[in-house]
Image 1 (cartoon, helix red, strand yellow):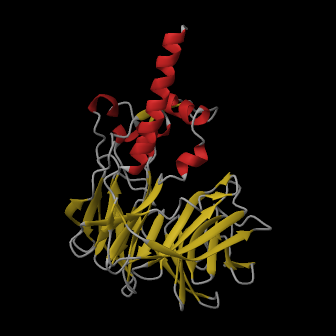
Image 2: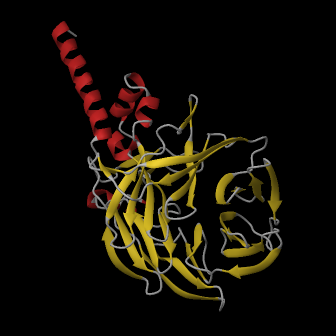
Image 3: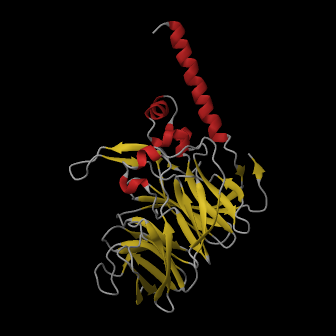
Length: 377
C-alpha cells in the first residue's frame, strides 16, 4: 500500500471514529437530570443465581431448578425460601419474584404462582394454564403472565380472588424482511420476551423491536389501544445471522437480540432501558467490532451514553426524556458489568441492579429522576 493510500485510509478511520462519537451524542434525545441516592456494591461468597426481584433491602436470587434465595443487603446473609419440587407449596424453576411488605409472589416457569408471607411461610398456590417466563401484578387481585412458547394469546390474565383465568391475548409480529422470514424459526414471528413488557392497573406495554415501537394494550379487553415511541437516530431493521450450532443444535438463521433490557411502569410514567445495538451493527458487524477492538477502547465507548433509559408519560404516552445513569457505573474498575434487574419505589426513584459475568458481584444503584424539567441535548 502506497503512502497516499495509507493517508487516505488513516483519514477515513479518523472520520469514522469522529462520526461514531458524534452519533453517541446526537441521538435526538432530551436529557433528564437525576441524582444518585445510593450505590451498594456486594461481593458474594456463594453463587445464588440471577436477581429476579427486590423489595426494600431484600434481594431475591434464582436459577433453573434450584432453590430461591433472599439476601438482606444490610447483613449480607442469604437464606432459602421454599423447596424445589412438584407439591402445591413447591416450585420447579423460579421465573420471577414480586414482593411487598406483606406478601411474596413466586412465579414457577411451569405454570404456577406461589404466595408466601413476609416470614417466608407458604400461604397459597395458584395454577396458571400456561408456561410463565414473567408475571406481574396489575393490582392486588390481577396477575398478568407471559408464555414465550406460543405465537398468539401469550398474555394470560388471572383473577386471584375468584381463582380463574379471565382473558388471554397477544399476537406475534411478522419479521419485516419477507425474503428471509421463510428460513427463520416460526417464520421469524416475534413472540414475547420476558424483559420487553410490563403491566400495571389496566394497561400493558410491550416493546416491538422489529419496528421500534411500543404497543399499548387494554389488559381486560385484550385490545391494542395504540402504538407510540420515538424513532432512534441510525435505527435499522434488526438483521439476521447464522448460528453455527453444536452437536445438539443444527446451524440456524436467527434474528439478533432485542436492544431492550427492561420495561417498568409506575403510577404516572413508563421507563425503558436500552442499549444502542443499532449503532454498532447490532453486535454482528465484524468491521465495526474490529474498529472498536483496535482503535477505540470499548470502555470509552460503552460509558458514553451507550446505555440509557427512555421515559414516557402515562397521561398521553408522549416521550418525556432520557437519562444516562450507566456511564459511571457500568464498570467495576476494569470489569464490565451487565444489567440484570430494575424496579421502582415510586414515580421518580429507580433501583438498578448490575452484576459481573460470574454472578458473584452485584451493584445496586438507586437514583432519583428529576421529573420537573428537561434539557435539550
